[in-house]
Image 1 (tube, rainbow, N blue to C red):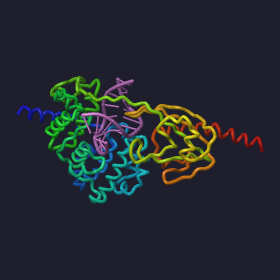
Image 2 (image 1 turned 180 degrees about the horizontal axis):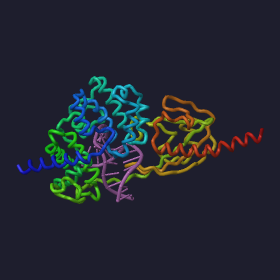
Image 3 (image 1 turned 60 degrees about the vertical axis):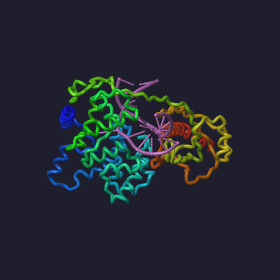
Image 4 (image 1 turned 180 degrees about the vertical axis):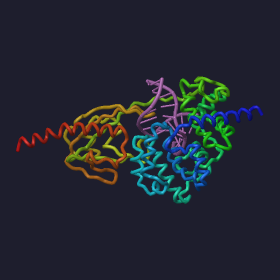
Length: 378
DNA sequence: AAGTCGGGGGT
DNA sequence: ACCCCAGACTT
């Protein structure tokens, strides 16, 4: 009984706060817009944006709202409907995802779009069970799409919500433990508003990202202050921590008549299906021999350009960038010779973009010299 | 239950 | 340096 009263107070306070302070986001239909559309009796006023919600949720996985904004807008301009996305080349989808990270998400979203068109008549499914069957859609995303796009009273649990609920209820167990997560899912399920589930879930996330932040939460401004068991940043408790492993990758940029050799990475693992200059995921002591063995090409001494560090969650990668001039060399389906001013269609990981920038800088130095030399002889 | 998968924001 | 982010998937 007391728990029910508390529950209602949380819902009321949070939704009231959300109505006044919700963030305005490109993929979000504000409560006012929805009411206006409903009053005009527009068909599908909620379900038409389910595709927008699907795309945004894919982009937002482990990625901050501020980062996603521009990517979402560009993506929707390129692929305005689920049909357009389903018909697109994966290469183009990856290119629009370039720089966002976790590239498997893009391929999953693309595959999901094709399933939605082929098996669901182009309509994003509206049940958690059907949503969970889509690639790249897990428990969180299924709940988010069902509640936000279809007003279904189902919970969500992401990093924000876990932090807010752990503080609100004073949950002192580590939130990265499976048992704690299950407990939090249950509490979220009991708490979710039956009348405005989408707004309620988004309100929890907005609260977590603007007031109930990991450090220095603004408890004085919090609508749940009087209901909160913690009112500080002493919760949540986390246990997991991993230190990145230091490794070296060697980029051997093969150059032939102003073009560089690009190869596509494997469909699995890091930067899956993205493109790169010929790169070995180790330190190459003897580049000449390595090229001989790998490509069957005899080359003169390579030139070392630069070395730089790239950080990912699990690795600290030192990239060694070398260039090698070659006289010949073939291509197959996984490789292409490209000029550096014609790469707009190739999805490239950030460190590769950095390497290409360095190549462009040195080409600018080298080219005029050669031209002068040729001119001098003539 | 632990590991893998990116890159940027904030402190 | 470190933690965190509208997680999902594999092992």
